[in-house]
Image 1 (cartoon, one colour):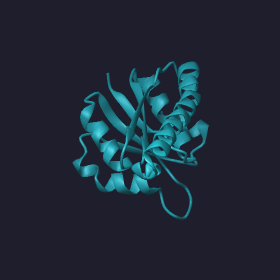
Image 2: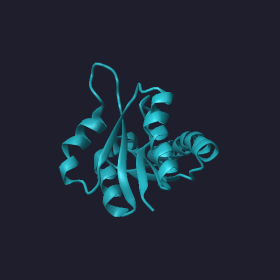
Image 3: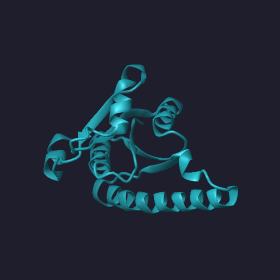
Image 4: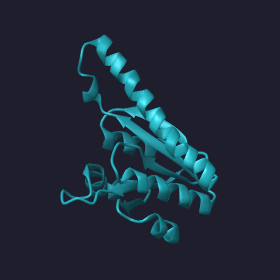
Length: 151
């Protein structure tokens, strides 16, 4: 089965990337893998404090994921799976793509402010020639109706 890989983070544009991935998966008989990456700099504290912070980050990710997962199940009939990795986000995304041969498309949400599309879109599109799959960049301000029409 072809899976859409979408990155879960705290950005506004993440919502449209999730919607797009779920809708495309529903319309094509595919699946969705949601990847959350915990950067290592979040834990540059004493070992005990770092472990507590790591566990809190994982709990926050699971809670955030469940909101999207419920919508995907209820509205799109798609059962997403969650992957949590620790490291530099771009490196971990590339590793996930290379380690899971079922991933067929990487879906990223693009920011809409004047700073550009965001660091993940910028860095990953630079590496797109060396990735074994295409990248779909979904505008963060695309309406739900427009998303439905193009998926």
